[in-house]
Image 1 (cartoon, rainbow, N blue to C red):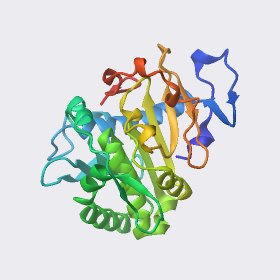
Image 2 (cartoon, one colour):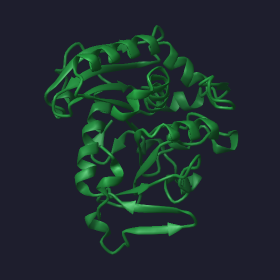
Image 3 (tube, rainbow, N blue to C red):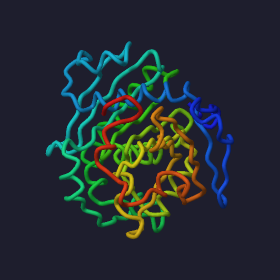
Length: 286
């Protein structure tokens, strides 16, 4: 799923040039076929809000040929998600759920940074996000490693919405710290992800050469916290669902080194940001 290979022209934006440059950053329209492929991951993210004992929930029907391996939660139920095998994707999917109360989560956000990973000098990440991930880290890595050994032709896809997107970012870095060869078979897809770490973390994450996509829906407020003023930045490559498009047209907004693209969602006015945009990706309710 190397997203840069799928650039196309969104049918409602035919009047736009394919690439628009501002400063050293560009944007490009994303094809409907690529959006359709990303909707599969949006549906997988949506399922994480159900309590699963088997792949039989109402939203499960949107992603066929899937076998539930594990539904997990930390002791305090802050970190919740599941692991599945999907034969359509030829992948093991590790999916993290977001907070069920987004407004309360935003109010309770604890932003104290902590050095992580320790091997990267000056790298700092959100202490609360890291604590949530570390509660489940060892068992998830062990399980995914065993599944990949059982299915050697499969990829690993790490998915998350909201708080779950932050956990997905940390999981990807942690897994590659443990086994760098996973970089070639690992993809990360997040929806409405908050900022996780500082520029040193972002630079390290981007240097891993992961196939990493960060989807932002219109003027979703969550990708704008914690604030850049406090040293937090976004990693990965942004797909922005345009705020003024009734057709949900999407643009690719590549970052550069340790800096996210100012022509993407980062350029939104604070007065336009809303929680109501947070639970959608195209026509998929998460």
